[in-house]
Image 1 (tube, helix red, strand yellow):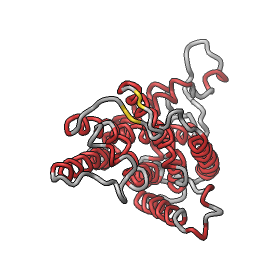
Image 2 (tube, helix red, strand yellow; image 1 turned 60 degrees about the vertical axis):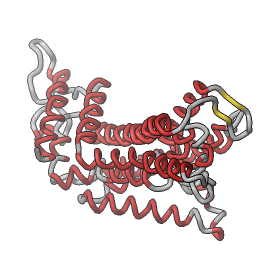
Image 3 (spheres, helix red, strand yellow; image 1 turned 180 degrees about the vertical axis):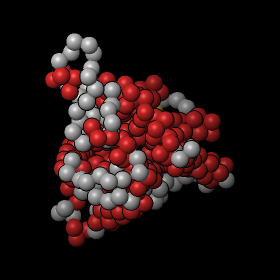
Amino acid sequence: MSQAEQRQDEAGPVALRTGAGTEAEAGTGVRTDAGPAGASPLAAARPRTGVLWTLGLFRSELVVTLRRWRTLALLGVLAAVPLLIGVAVKIETDGGGGPSGAGGPAFIAQITNNGLFLVFAALAATLPVFLPMAIAVVAGDAIAGEANSGTLRYLLVAPAGRTRLLIAKYATALAFCLIAALVVAVSALVVGAVLFPLGDVTTISGTTISFGEGLLRAALVALVVAASLAGIAALGLFVSTLTGSGIAAMATTVGLLITVQILNTIPQLDAIHPYLFPHYWLSFSDLMREPVYWDEVQKNLGLQALYAAVFCSAAWARFTTKDVNA
């Protein structure tokens, strides 16, 4: 099934639920049908753009995104990372060396004592590269991919306006951030339970918490990691509105991600490091302290919110004034 046919299969019911008119109506967002008997022409001309329509559009976008082979492949790679880490640690442990953790992700030295730490180690390993690159691909393709495949104009037929479509696209990107983080966490938990013992968790502060509380901390860490990707998702959405090529948008977003990551490692540029969106990504490790140290976590979430506000606003300004011919 082509992407255009898939769009018609998924977005079509949404358009029917909202009473979308013809393509000529899309430019004004005004319905031209007569409406129910006895209704005034003004009432008939009002576009139906309620919350249910927006939720239906979001559902359609999320389903289309998750059905793509590219998306499934990205999630498969993310799920494989904890397996590779777990097997590597298991082999090294069985060889008698024991994992030193030198040069590896945080928490990797504790995996052999408690498989739950594989969740934290896997998230720490995937957050700098794999997770943001997956988000960059999905967000970068959000608008540009539709324009490239000729389905963007079809999506704009429904009289909800471009703003609601952009909101649905960004909400889909955020949902994918959460799904991707949970895929890594769940995969790591399963692998950790199979290869290593589970039990009470020793925090970074040296105190011990129950396994149940450790699971809650792991879930909280996954949520924070997902929220940490809101900035790169907004950046990718903005880049996606600048071009009609999905590949170009994805490549540009990934290129910007790599550039910012490099800038964040240059000591001479430490003055700007706190303003770069990846700078506080690994602050989620403070959630494993007792008591929890929230300072850098709050800085991270605030920085992501700022990037999301700036680049979503820029994407809206660009997309609402963009000529759509495809």
